[in-house]
Length: 357
Ligand SMILES: CC(C)(COP(=O)(O)OP(=O)(O)OC[C@H]1O[C@@H](n2cnc3c(N)ncnc32)[C@H](O)[C@@H]1OP(=O)(O)O)[C@@H](O)C(=O)NCCC(=O)NCCS
Image 1 (cartoon, rainbow, N blue to C red):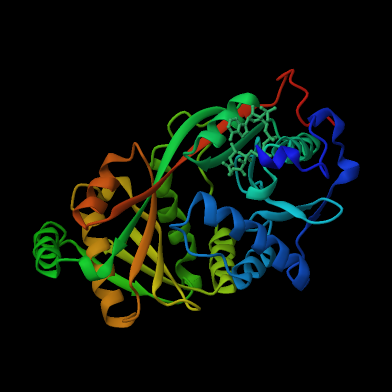
Image 2: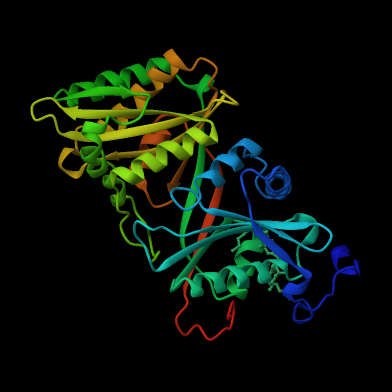
């Protein structure tokens, strides 16, 4: 390939060492670092996932400002002359202490020169140094991701699908019919709209309800249930506020007992108010079977129609195996945009030397 003919770059990966590299964690106050990271991600997005909206510098700053509490630590990778990729290094202090999740793209102009392998090695070293015993990564379902993963002993353990709902295509008559039908099954519950922080007095109860998301399938991934706490809920709220997302949380409360039964959350991008992101939808096990999942999503659509008139699309991610949630989304007219593969491998005794300090 032509890239290999570019002799600024040695062609054998053994000839490349980290002395030709620098990597630095992005400081949200450093304009150049933020711009370089966003530009590297944007270059890869245009090639690998043109269906995604461009990442804004504002989002990068918000993510970096909450790195470690909610967001991953963002890193840019540079040669002596230019940025060749970006990476996110994500570990949780709340749960899954064995795991480091690594995300990275090599700039499309610099692929097949060993940079991906070096990024992976460096991030793996960091994970080992921090006592993590398993690494995971993900990529769009393209040949490069699978080939690269298998070259590094990473196994595909799950698949996730990105779907998009285009609101102008929504058949409101059908949505209203489904709303009436599901409301009649969910009469024991009231739906409550919350567009600010979770009230302090209820935050413990919210933390318990949010944990219902742990029932979503994880396929063969070696991951533990996520642990939710009031502090984690506040970290989520802060991270999205700083990214410029307005969070709308719609939840169901059991009328008789006051118990929180389920919720759905949509974030609307305040910088680009035509775009929305679906975050968690989960119904607590004891309250399933009353059509709350569908009703919450339909009621959310009504709320968004009333309060977010400029909103045009909502994106959602599901495990490909999450039949129940996908059935709800398909009933609402979501289209498949892209598929991602999730890879993982244990680090103990992997014997491959990848990332050995
Ligand atoms: C996957 C990705 C990170 C690889 O980065 P890279 O710098 O091109 O990878 P390397 O040069 O280190 O490749 C290492 C080995 O992976 C395999 N590989 C990488 N890209 C490949 C491709 N397009 N086709 C076939 N094999 C490939 C090869 O075995 C390669 O060794 P070789 O070049 O000696 O044959 C890059 O294509 C990318 O950024 N893709 C989008 C992000 C992504 O999918 N990330 C998920 C990774 S699991």
